[in-house]
Length: 92
Image 1 (spheres, rainbow, N blue to C red):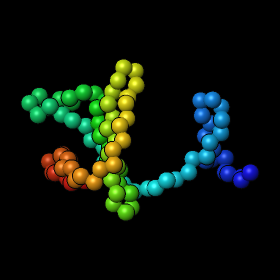
Image 2: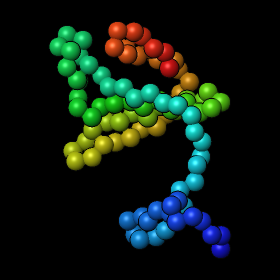
Image 3: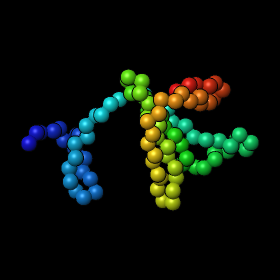
Image 4: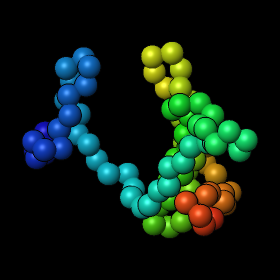
């Protein structure tokens, strides 16, 4: 059995030990949605996260609030999105 540093060991709900191992790293953006007429958040907790690895491959995570928890939908997606960042538009 391999020895792992204690700092990377997690314990799941069943009490079993698991090692946290990096799959990939990169950059991300996280955004929410506003109603353009009221300027208010469409639905609290409804957000998107776009992850981009160092090779430029993107993964889109949709966070949808549910009663007492959130649903996470994962989609592999290289589509560019334009996002408002204060008074400027960024593309990710």
